[in-house]
Image 1: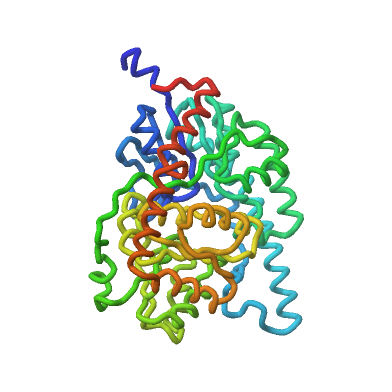
Image 2 (image 1 turned 90 degrees about the horizontal axis):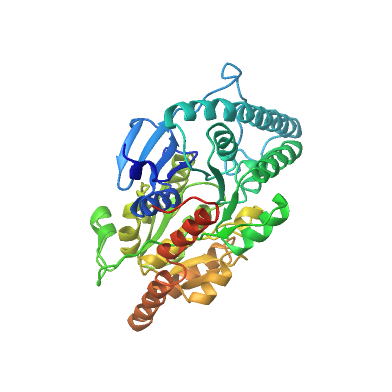
Length: 428
């Protein structure tokens, strides 16, 4: 390796998934790679996925996640949307709470052991880097440990308020308190704290007791959608020409409003709901859709790879994201799918919540709704897809204008590279 090559800064992006549908990590990796950084995405292993992969502008190294105390069984834990949730007698409910407390506590204990072993394995697979960037609280201790071992700088890219989201929000209170303390301690050891929105920045600055270095939104990459739009969904699902497509694209899980969408689509004429997603709850929700009165108008397809998202979005009539106000994280969430829809020129129906409301209002990119009320979700969908051709064309232009301005990914990537500049990581 010559001297000039040796000076190319190395960036390791640490994620807690197999790197199939992580659009933020993909955008960061491809942008940094295009700018000349030597980029490695460190992901979890996945069924049928190669341990090493060369992609445009970056490589992927998939490192198996260790299983400390793997011999110890973990009690089955009910999900919030499971069929038996909230049912049964008092004794059964008490037993369920005991299982939940013990199971979540055991998982949290395993996590603390896992991070040490995983950092060791990643170190052996990846070697040194100039930037260790954690994309979640799960990989945050890895970035801290790897920086301690190899040098460089550590960046915490807090995409979510992790300790107030999903399964973490359902930890027993004492485990959540412990996790919050650990996150705060780890964050004090990183060189920069990045997040995705002003509301998240305010919350994180307060809870982690340090200022946010920069806001890097989940903006869309530049895309020029075809006009008229492609009929991708019509071809895939053999839809009639006049059928309107209501698209949910993203992770299939509790709290995202899918049950409400299954009810809402029955109230919208000449329309189908397409769920293009992934996640551990995918099959459960597909079964629920199949049992609903509107089953014939709900279609499921596999999740979309990040580089294909713009084209699939652009083929829909409206993108829907009725995020539920069930956690602090969701209430202040600014969904990636909101910006992705803008980038495809597709208006949105989104939750009237503090994180989303200001963006939809400022850009005029769609309709707000009460995400807990299927009737109001249906009203908002009809307001978008029943609009006149002139209004739909104007809405498309508003979306594209917003996506190509301050919300665009090029602008966001430049902000992240500016953070690296301030940390002394020279640009290529």
